[in-house]
Length: 187
Image 1 (cartoon, one colour):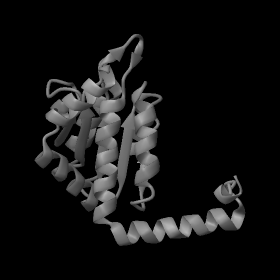
Image 2 (image 1 turned 135 degrees about the vertical axis):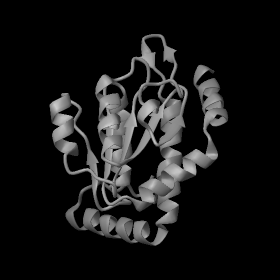
Image 3 (image 1 turned 180 degrees about the horizontal axis):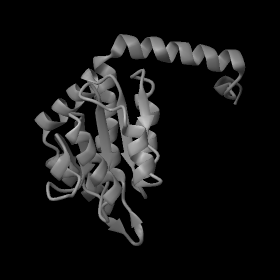
């Protein structure tokens, strides 16, 4: 029930125009960087995985230390975009990375919970999602729904390229026996 409420509040809080401007920024980027620390790392990994099916150059930034992050971002410039994800307790590393990226003219997208978030202060685009504590676990259904919508939106805009990529991947998987296939008819 709490997750359903989080999804409803997330849907109400997402600024649709801001969302589509963020999608446009991704579409125009030469390189896309994705950063998440703590429990947001799972979201960042998921996002980077699917963006790699859409874009040629996607970097999942290793958030082990500020120096490691900045080393990975050293070539980021005004033709690039970064998506940083963080919720309370906010990652200082993510906020500092967005400031660094902003200073270099990178299009910055924050997926966070509030316009008062430290990430939002340095974000060109703010995609707000609810992320409440459920016992000791962060509920990530709100941010994940925003991430899913973002992936689908950019995939639809690059439909032909994505279809071609997915066809090639399926052929490679079949050729190299990457996945087991289950014959549903024999069950």
